[in-house]
Length: 181
Ligand code: 5GP
Image (cartoon, rainbow, N blue to C red; front, top):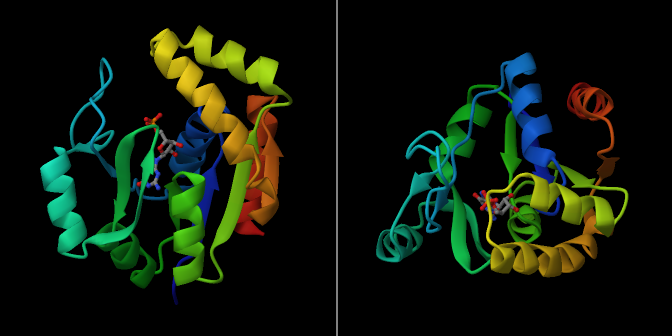
């Protein structure tokens, strides 16, 4: 029996990471660690939060066909390794990928029964406030992320479900219901 592939996307600041992390813990879903060429933020650990690679290392993995999907997001490369996804699905384990909209559509092409879940805030004001409140990014990065959010929101209609993330507990339950449904 194969596991389900659940793909979570949404603008940076939509709260998708917080909800996904809690749901993974609750449902014992293994972590899937992406590779990226962006620099680690304070406190992020290589091999735990991401595999932090140089652009050259990332491009070598592209050439070796090691990625299930990859995309350029906010000026950096991000990708899911094939091994991460295929090993777990074959073991019958569910896999949650938290990836951008371009990567989500690539993964959906590969696995037609993948479940796509889109996270967003009620409006752009809430999103901007969340990005500022987390104090992890420079003004320039915040502006890039807000601009990208407008593009990402145009993809919402390609997703199977939307979670409007206003209340943490409700969003966690909604995601659990989608996965178990
Ligand atoms: P952040 O830099 O905030 O960790 O992530 C930025 C964006 O990259 C988020 O939208 C996140 O979902 C996306 N992302 C993270 N890992 C992957 C991946 O493996 N593939 C793709 N396509 N996007 C990813």
